[in-house]
Length: 190
Image 1 (cartoon, rainbow, N blue to C red):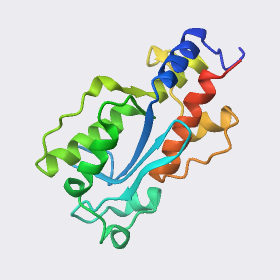
Image 2 (cartoon, one colour):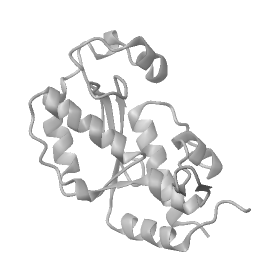
Image 3 (cartoon, rainbow, N blue to C red):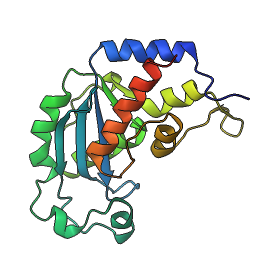
Image 4 (cartoon, rainbow, N blue to C red):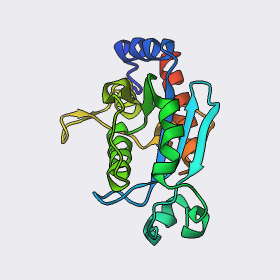
């Protein structure tokens, strides 16, 4: 079977989304569990221009296994703002915009957990957020019978398979740029 399947409906959806002038974000976190929080946030526009890029102090020690993946250490975040200090600027950028994320469910959950830990009220509309990982899975078209849905690909793999010359660096702004480039690739696929 030839991949990508290049689902025309997904290509059209990607074109429609790009016409709305979306922004893209990525986070790095202290881990993946229910008590973990965001320690880096990157937001870019569809052209990859950085709108926000900052480390965030979680207020507790970053687990070594997380630092091994994202290379963010306690020393690096020591003088960084707490989530509650960073949020007003982030919120201004996000408000009213369509927001693309690779694995949106994860990043959105960790942002909400960060809110909860800081005692903040989440007042951003989740319906404006879209998952580029799910779009790419439908575009690529490889079926996963175990999940009874399209197979998800890691961001780095999706970028490589699409010939995008941007690395998945596990730094939020870089990964947001790759996510934006991936949606543009889908929208412009011929």
